[in-house]
Length: 60
Image (cartoon, rainbow, N blue to C red):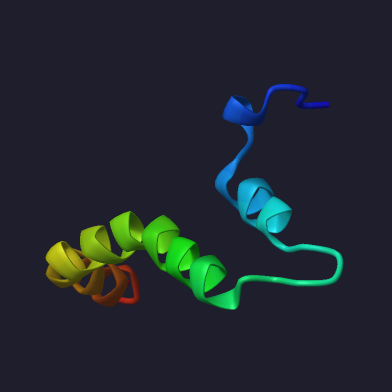
């Protein structure tokens, strides 16, 4: 449904990096790291709060 490459989602864009006969795995893995880096950084900085919420939700 998406016709413009600038509106592709990250997983869809990564899928287009894979070729039919050749895949640049170094570039593919590098772009995969760049795509998960923001989520990973948010988790690292707010890990204490995530653990508190999960630990607090188990108590009644």
